[in-house]
Image (cartoon, rainbow, N blue to C red; front, side):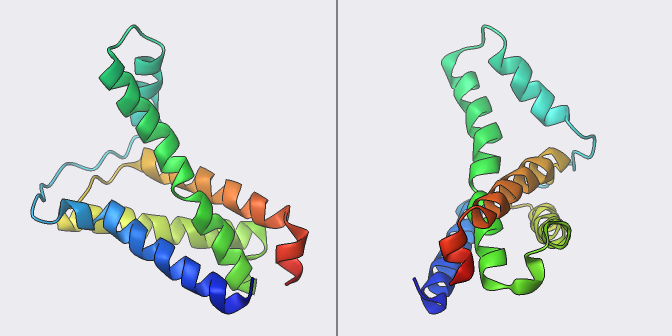
Length: 143
């Protein structure tokens, strides 16, 4: 694939993410307090998965834990592919932290989502997997 095609795919991914993170809640905003204690939400979902909870609760737990990781893998892949300054892992981590923190704060300010430090942790994990996938794909890296 050419660089231009990757930019188009990245643009489409960004639009989808904007819709998933903010757009689908338009008209349903509510200010939910920030959750700033690390591993509170993650711990709660892990306890749900380890319990005899109903199927719906277990589905919500899996959806939250895996969804927050998987949804951000493409971001971690596209960014170093398209912008050389993010090819160093620590620089990549810094950029991803800043971008995801901005999204979390935007969700809080607009009331179109929840601002949860655990989302930040899971999203960063996802972008790290994406960066690793980029790093392990030498054909794409060289193009």
